[in-house]
Structures are given as C-alpha cells and as structure tokens.
Amino acid sequence: MTDAAPPPRMPKLPMTKRLFVKTYGCQMNVYDSARMGELMQPFGYQPAASPDGADLVVLNTCHIREKAAEKVYSELGSIRRLKRARERQGGRMIVVVAGCVAQAEGEEIQARAPFVDIVVGPQAYHRLPELVARAGRGPLLDTSFPAEAKFDHLPQLAGAAGVTAFLTVQEGCDKFCTFCVVPYTRGTEYSRPAGEVIAEARRLVAGGAREITLLGQNVNAYHGAAPDGGEWRLGELLGALAAITGLARLRYTTSHPLDVDEGLVAAHRDVPALMPFLHLPVQSGSDRVLKAMHRRHTAADYRATVERLRKARPDLALSSDFIVGFPGESDDDFRATLDLVRDVGFAQAFSFKYSPRPGTPAALAADQVPEPVKAERLARLQALLGEQQRAFNRSSVGRFLPVLFEKPGRHEGQLVGRSPYLQPVHAQAPAALVGEIVPVRIVAAQPNSLAGELAPQEVAA
Ligand code: SF4
Image (tube, rainbow, N blue to C red; front, side, top):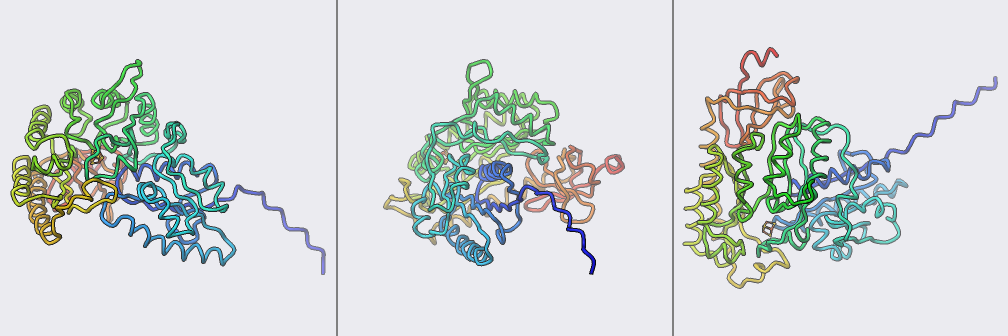
C-alpha cells in the first residue's frame, strides 16, 4: 500500500441558504416580497421554489380577502410539518409571517402557531435581517410603524429586472373606508420623495424594465417631496418618469376617485407613455351605500370623473372593484350599481361579496345582508361585467395593437405580452422580441386574453 497524497482542501465558499417566499394578495405584496428577497441576499439567501428544505420561509400575507387568516393558518400547518422534518434531519428552518395578517393578528399567530419564529408587519419588514439574526431565542414580533422611513432602509435595486416592474411610490391610506383594514394594517398615508422614485425607476430601466407600474394603496393620493423642494402630485411624477430614456410604458394602481385631480387628468392627456387603462374602484353605484362605506363621493361624482378622464383620453379603458351585499344594501341600491356599470362600461372588473373584516366599522353593522342574497346579486353583477369584458375584447379583433412582449407563452414558439389596455396577447413570435413593443393584429378574443399575429416583417426581424 502506498501513501496517498492528501486530497486538496476545498476553498471555503460562502454558505448558500434557501429562502422560500409565498406571496398572497396584491401587487404591493409582490413588490414587498421581492424586496425581502433582496434584503436577505447579502446574507447568502437564494430563492427556493418550494418550502421543503428551505432555511427561511416567509409567508407574505394579505388580509383583504375572505378567510385570509384561516388560509394562512392552514398553510402554516404544512410548514410546521416541513420544519419538524428538517429539524429531525439536524437542519433548521426559520418561519416568518409577514404582511397584513401579521399586522392585524400578530399575537394570535404566536399563540396559535408557536413554531413561527418571526411575525413582522408591512411597515417593519426592512428589519428582517436583524430579526432573522435573533431568531431561535424565542418568538419575535415587530408590528410597529417605525419612525424611520422603511424605504430608506431597503437595499437599492440592482441587476436585472423583468420587462415589466412594480415600483411602490406610496403606502398606507387615510380614507378609512368602513369595510377596509388597510389604514389599520399599513398605517397612514406616506409618499416617497420623487427623487427617490425616479432613481429607482432609472435602475429598473437600466436592468431591462420597459414598463413600470407605480403602486400604492391609494396611489393617486401621492404627494411626495419634489426635487425642487416643493411637492409633486401623481400627475407631475408620471410626467417626470416618462422622460426616462428606455421607459416605454407607465401605469399606476390602485386609485381613489376622490384623488383624480386636474394634474392627473392632464397626465392622461399629455403623457403618451401613460397607458390608456385605469383601475378606478367605485365599490357601489348607490349613494346611500357609498355614504355608509365612507367613500366620500357619490355615483354622480364617479360618472363625472370618468367623463373628465375620457375627455382627456378618449380610448381610456376602465377597470373597477365592486362589493355586493354591503350591510344595508337594498334591491334598489344594488340596481343602482347595475345602472352605473351599464352607464360607464368596464373592460375588466373585480367583484366580491361583502365579508366583514374584524376591527372595521362595517363588521359591526346590524343590517348584514343574508348570504344567498349576496350570492344572487354577485352572480348578476358578474354576468353583466363578464359580458362587458367579452365585448371589449371582441372589439379588439381586426385591430393592430402595440404589444409589449414579456415572456414565452405556453405553446412552442409563442410569446405573451400586454396590449395598452392590459389585455394579455398571445402570438407566434421570435424570442428576440421579448422586451419589444410590436404591432400585433388581433385575430381572436377570449374572455380574458387575445390572440394575435405579427406582421411578416416583424416575424423576420
Ligand atoms: S381608499 Fe382603498 S385602501 Fe383606503 S380605506 Fe378605502 S378601500 Fe381601503
């Protein structure tokens, strides 16, 4: 037996850890989840596709939809089993509940799911690295609204972005609609300084983004510090962002009818990059219900706002949110909602049965509408909205629409992108067209998407 040379020593690599983030709810949560991922990257965390075997699991929760908290507890049941299995193998899994359920039910989560290591609210998640470093020494709860601005403590976005990107410009809300938890979970209205938003937009564009959607719970309440020391509203911010070379499209969501000011209407007229599609929630067409919801506008105000916007941008397509069966909603109130839908005409909409959110004033109302009545009204409303959406999509057939291609479609050789009106458009197209805006002839309409064909010269490009 000869003496074998000792095996070469492997250089010590920084240990890679696996981070799984599950996102519930709105685009704001999608944005927050991405930022949490970036926050943890310098500590060696790389994204994982499943919680199985992950070192850090974050559930970024939403409190808007019905039974949101119960869905989180049910997901936590599976996570607990995975955590135990990992511990049996000598590993470790840190479990975090973030987002609006964390904010609203922090202590309850810790009582019902004691294996959760960290509960962190949406205004405190920039402290995630610090909380993760402290994990394992007892449950941690941070649902504070810290005095320091969260955005100042988030890492600057760097590297590749998608063709489309989200950018949070505003958070929280001061409107206090009586059905909504946002003012309690996200806190009062806060607008990021315009210079900071522009710098982040430039980084996104440098990373490949062609379209940016500005996000805020009440995005058109935006009133951020302007670079000249004054204050900008959303219209001015959109105008400044449109000047960024390479940025082709702008959108914003979610807006409140009360905050559609003249500057914003002018932006719809004067900023070609601002796409002619607007999500403008109305919730109900009845003044009585709107008042009970504390929406602070009437159905006539909403119609007038839409008229101002359409005068500025005649091809503007609208989307909206509707709640049916709000406490006290009568048949006449519901009919007023159907009337408003018929008058305005929507290209898309989200509609739900009212469901009480604990801690909101409407949850305590005595005149709750029976479930079967809500269900019947919702079916009628959705039938009308569905008809309008199909008619809108059909009206695109035969037209050439500029489509921003985002990614491969489900079929071989296919790309999928969006029309200016946010309709998904599928077409056979070369992969090189991802990130390009190309005229596409629409040949067929589905309820939720369009099929199109490229002009021959585009296929050859
Ligand atoms: S304006 Fe929107 S976010 Fe604000 S309280 Fe009303 S529904 Fe909630």
